[in-house]
Image 1 (cartoon, helix red, strand yellow):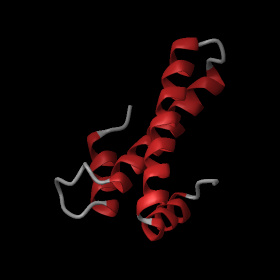
Image 2 (tube, rainbow, N blue to C red):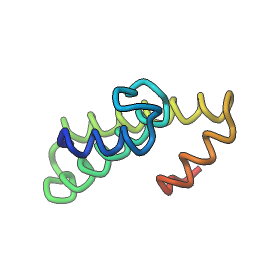
Image 3 (tube, rainbow, N blue to C red):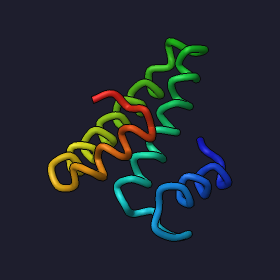
Image 4 (cartoon, helix red, strand yellow):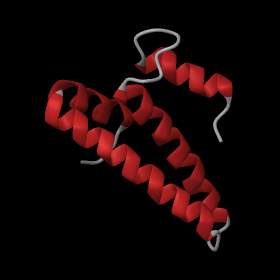
Length: 88
């Protein structure tokens, strides 16, 4: 779980305003932060299958948002991919 401060930092960095949580860039950045946290958790607890399932759901949601950006706004897609250092 990410803290309110971390989430607000992400919104300030990627959003268009202080309450902008709906743009794909903000959602992708939040999902990425949550994925990083869950990945660290799974390194310590490799048999936690419910967390693994949640992690796979988040990865799928992030992938769908990235696909949407790639199809509709290629420059925004490239910018978020480069900034978050995501693989294609």
